Image (cartoon, rainbow, N blue to C red; front, side, top):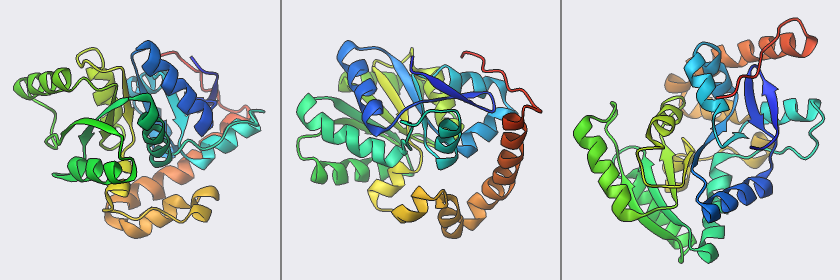
Length: 256
């Protein structure tokens, strides 16, 4: 398991895009099963009130620093090589690597038709990409028959990586519960990357991403859905981090 930085009791992996890709390539090559959580402020704050979710994050093969605050915490702890491992960028890098490695992909999630549209767009960008299946789940949890159907689809498709495009914490919980049930090596939860790369939602400009302002761009795009998340979580996160860094509050890092 990679080195981790304790962010409010969540172990965020010390990574950059290159080292994350190296770890994924190694896991696929050796068939080392696991799930990858792409984690920012929202995920860390969800974990404050949900011990099971915190264990899921800490039990991940990788818990990548998706948001700039995770990177800043790493650098404050002396991890100079730590960079943002943003879900949409990670997906692009893995797909580019897959053209020569033969890694096979399955897309699970999104609104109706999004996984298929995503696969089409990626195949245009990466003509040699092996996409072996897509599945759009219902908004609710899968019932027993649907679980069996998904297991059979994945078994027949034989993917190396199953990409999960749900929201946090739903996608992380799905991965943790499904890892032993599905015949796949890695599961990677990338949330909004499905909508970004399918062309349904615009990404924030790079300068906003680098300066930690992507949340504001997304809030302006989807104020109804995201206002509660950002306007509540961001100030609380800042206060809790101040308490952790000052030593006023301890956040033990429990293994998943």
